[in-house]
Image (cartoon, rainbow, N blue to C red; front, side):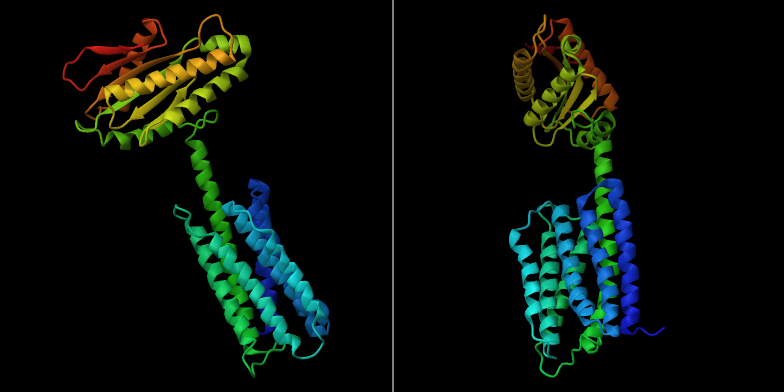
Length: 393
C-alpha cells in the first residue's frame, strides 16, 4: 500500500483515535486533568484528519479550514495538558490564538491563500508546541524519562513547523492545500504520523511514571500525619545510620502523647486525629536537615537525628514539649494535662539492629513516664559502659 496523502491521513486517524481512547480510559481511572486535555487533543487530530480527507471531494471549507483549525485546537489542548501536568498557570493571552485563526477567514479566495494558510497555521502550531516543551524544562529537579522524552518530541515537532512555515515564503515552492500537493505537505504528513505516535507514547509514559511514583510515596507515608510509616522509616534509617561515627554521633527520640486517651474519650476520635496531626506538623517544622521522622503507630512517633549532641537533643525535646502542651491546653479541656514524654539515646556507632536501638529509646521513654511524664529522658551510649542518664524536664 503506497503512502499517498490519503493513506497517511487514515493512519493518523487510527493512531490519534487510539491515543485519545487510551488516555480517556486512563483519565477515568486516575482523574488527572492533563490526561483529559491530551485525550481531547488527539480526538481533535483524529476528527481533523477525517475532515481533511473531504477536500478530495471538493469540500474545501470543511477539508481545509476546519481540518487545519482542529490541528491548532489539538496543540492548544496539548499545551493546556502540559500546563496542568507541570502545575503552571497560562496567561490568557494564549487564547488570542483562536482570534488569529478566525482572522484567516477573511483571506481572499485566490491561489495565494494556500501559502498564507500554511504560514499562519504552521506558526501557531510551532508556538504552541515550543511553549509546551518549554514548560517541561527541569525546575530544580530531574524530570522523569517520559517527561524528558515528551519535552524533546514537542521541541522537535515545534521546530519542524517553524521550518514548514519558512517554506511558505520561499519563492516557487509548490503548495496546494486543496489537493495535498507539494513536497513540504508530503513531508508534513509523514512527520504528523510519527509525531502523533511519539507524543502519545511520551504522554502515557509521563503520566504513568508520575502515578507510580505517587503510589510509592503514598505507600511510604502514614495516611493521617503524612510522616513516614514504620516500614519506610526502617528502610531510610539504614542509610542514615551508615554515616554515624565518633565525629558525627546519632540520636533517636521516641515520643509519646501523655493522656491521649482522655482527648479521644472526651472530645472524640476526630479531635484525637487533629492532635496527632498537630504533633506531626510540629515535628516537621522543627526537624533538622538530614533527619528522619515517622509515626510508629497510635500516638507514638520517632525521630532519628544525624550529627547530634546532647544539647541539640535536649533543645529539640524541650521545644516540642512546650509548643505541644501550649496548643493542646488551648484546644482541649481535660482533667489531666495532655503533654509529651520523650525517650532519647545518643550513640556514636551504628547499632547492630534498628529494632535494638528503638528498644533502648523505648526504655528511656518508659523511665520518662514513670518519673512523672512531660519530660525527656536521655541516655548517652557514646561512653563505654555508661549507665548514667540525663533527664530534662
